[in-house]
Image 1 (cartoon, rainbow, N blue to C red):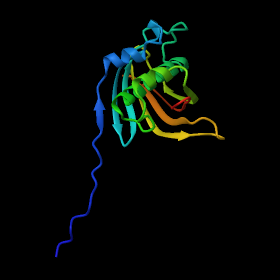
Image 2 (image 1 turned 45 degrees about the vertical axis):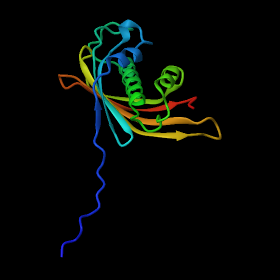
Image 3 (image 1 turned 120 degrees about the vertical axis):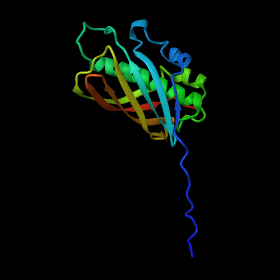
Image 4 (image 1 turned 30 degrees about the vertical axis):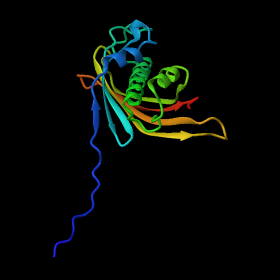
Length: 182
C-alpha cells in the first residue's frame, strides 16, 4: 500500500522588477544633479521582504577632491538612493510588509522628513572604484513598533554591500525608522 502524497504548500515565486526609469527619476528629484549616483535598480520580492541590485557611478565627489575610492559619505548617499528606490518600488508594486497600505503619494510625503537612519555601519574590505560599481540592499525585517505609548513607527533592519570589477568590497548594516506613519 502506497502512502498518500504529503501535503505541500508551494512558496510563491520570487517577483523581479527591472528599473522603472520614471520612478527612479522621481526618487532622485531631491538630490542635486551632481549627487545622483544611482543608475539602475532591479527589485526582487520574496515572502514580504524586498531587495534591490543597483548600478552606480560617481564621476566626481560632491564634496571633496578625488580620493580614488568610495568613501564613507558616498557610501551613505548611495545607500539612501538605493533604499529610497527600493521602498518606492515596493510601495508601487505592493511588495514589502509594513507598507501594504501606503500609496506612492504617502511615500513622496514621507521620503525626506520621516525616513530616519537610526544606525549605520560600514565595513571597508577593499577600495571600491566610485566611477563604476554595483550595490545590493536587502530588507531583513520590518516591524511596526510603538515605544512608551508614543506614535507608531516602522522599524526596519537592512543590510547592504558594494562591489566593483576589481574586487573592491564594502558592506554594512543599517537600521531605519519610518516615523509619522498612518
